[in-house]
Image 1 (tube, rainbow, N blue to C red):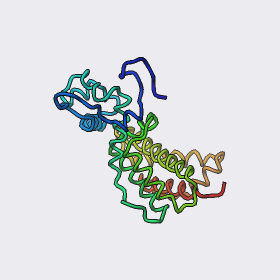
Image 2: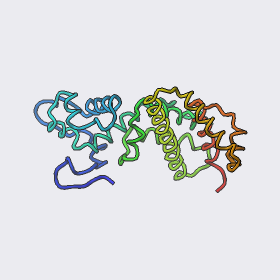
Image 3: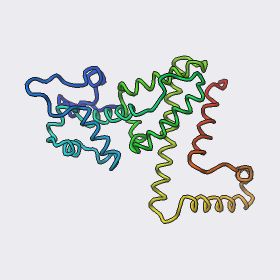
Image 4: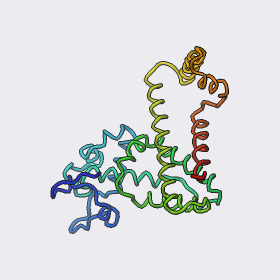
Length: 246
């Protein structure tokens, strides 16, 4: 839940109506030196380069050449900044102007785009669980997904839940992929070497005879271990079960 506090905007959580319906405060006198779009873009660039923990109000203020306190007149707190960042990168989805009519193919395309987006912004999958509001770019993706699923025979609620399920799957899978990349990067062995070592370990464990189901699975498995192939297999398995009878 978003935090609540006293009268200070810096501790008041996120008000979605104030954030999205009136995104910029009216100002009198001289034009403002900065705007939320530029501030958000700098915060995203910082998170992309150094990770989300590096995004502090002080750090972002330094990147735009502003005082930390002055930044609060544009963005009242870090929670709000995170909401702006999530919706900002949501605008980077490269989606068709309209669905093709093949909802399974369109969902696959959406999932591939989500995965690519999360790899471009590695902080995003970890930030999504903290999202508390839905901005205009995210709403556009929602609308597109609801249109994609219109031929699937799902009611409106199920279509929204399907979007959440799809995003959760992609986010979780990308978190795993990123963790694997970090683990490999921290060692002196290639991904292929590690996969070969894992396969030898599993075959040795299964050969002991007390893991018959694992032994059968290893015997029947000839799947491509390439990350894209693994993602596609899991994605197809999930999509194919979306309209299965309850």
